Image (cartoon, rainbow, N blue to C red):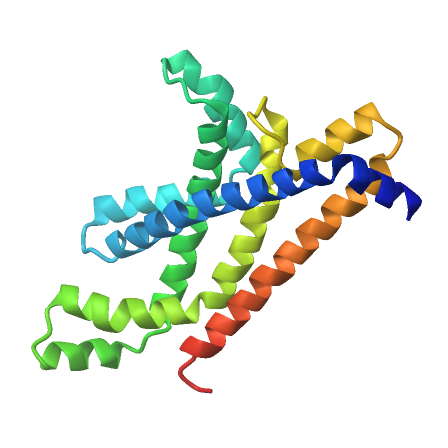
Length: 220
């Protein structure tokens, strides 16, 4: 415990800044990733086989490729195509693409749980396809995927450690732990502090997800 106290005394503000950067990367990746995933899921409903084929390929590629491999491709391969992206946007882009693919896949599963009779009833009431999608399909699908999306958000938060693989402007938790471990003899204590922060953040997200799931659940 003495090492932990000494570590927090020396590097407490640095851990606070690293935690805030981890949260920032999580938020700025999840929001556009979620919105893009919703768009992909909706477009896959259109009766256009070529578009469905392309979007299915998009989902399968970014859902199955290792995040670190995607980051390496963006950082080191795209410059060969004269596409230069700074390190921070590269990390955010990587996490956003992965998040969007999983979001689209989860939403597709949620949409498939909606009985076809509801769609037929909505059509019989004279509702247009766009109205059915916005008022009937998407609300139920989103309610059905609260728990999977909560797990995805936790996984995304943990994946912000990707920033440690590139010369990132700023230190998130994993990068900070690596630096402390290289510069001092309190690497284990630094890991314990960072792991605690990751766990507490994950528990906070899980609690928020469970609370939201209870509020939107149809059968209480």
